[in-house]
Amino acid sequence: MNIILLGPPGAGKGTQAKLLEQGRGMKQLSTGDMLRAAVAAGSEIGLKAKAIMDRGDLVSDEVILAVVGERMSQPDIKAGVVFDGFPRTPAQAEALDGMLAARGQKVDAVVEMKVEDEELVKRISGRFTCAACGKGYHDSFDKPKKDGICDVCGGSKFIRRADDNEKTVRDRLTVYNKQTAPLVNYYAKRGNLHSVDGMADIKVVTASIGRILDGI
Ligand code: ADP
Ligand code: AMP
Image 1 (cartoon, rainbow, N blue to C red):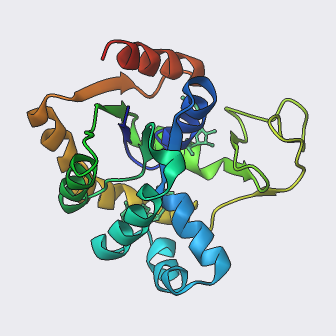
Image 2 (image 1 turned 90 degrees about the horizontal axis):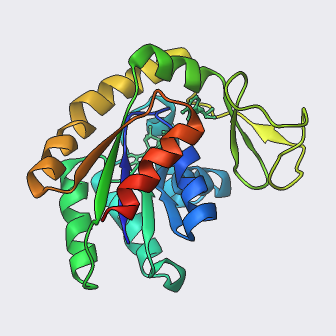
């Protein structure tokens, strides 16, 4: 099963994608994580992407589709993918339809996660992740059970993203509304769009997504 978590930055896509990996054995494909890995590795793609990401703009469709195409060719991803942060433009959505059709698959469900702007700013301003396993946390909403120790892997080093500041968040929301929000209509027309209240507690959102996936 291939599903897309569609929503603005801070909606909880990464949080829910990781829970779907644990609960349903699906694979998270986060283009943001892949680009950050490319930046950390100092690769050609990373060098090109860094300044664009720091100012909250979108990396070009051409670069993103090359990165996703490469990942989709790997065998571990055949059983099903949770797309997180991809697609972000109509061109990316069309390309994804083509990539899946080529392997006899489709987008089985798109889950739109609705969250108000001021909540998004609060969430992103308090976001941090475990440097070792990538588990996401929040200063107030989702703290590690033991202060300074990752619940999942026991790691003790945490990182905050360079683009997780209030100014860039507001720019990223503008970019989302302009370039990505039209995808809601794109998928509504195809009949595979579902919406959840992303303002609810993490566990409640997980249960809502679970009900959608069980129903398809
Ligand atoms: P996205 O991947 O959509 O950008 P994240 O999953 O990284 O968003 O979530 C952004 C921040 O909000 C993280 O710090 C996360 O711990 C927190 N968060 C995620 N879902 C919820 C929720 N339902 N309620 C409160 N905080 C949440
Ligand atoms: P994210 O981790 O999803 O919040 O993405 C972080 C940043 O990476 C975005 O602000 C963009 O600059 C870039 N990015 C991630 N995914 C995409 C995509 N599908 N298309 C274009 N840019 C992307």
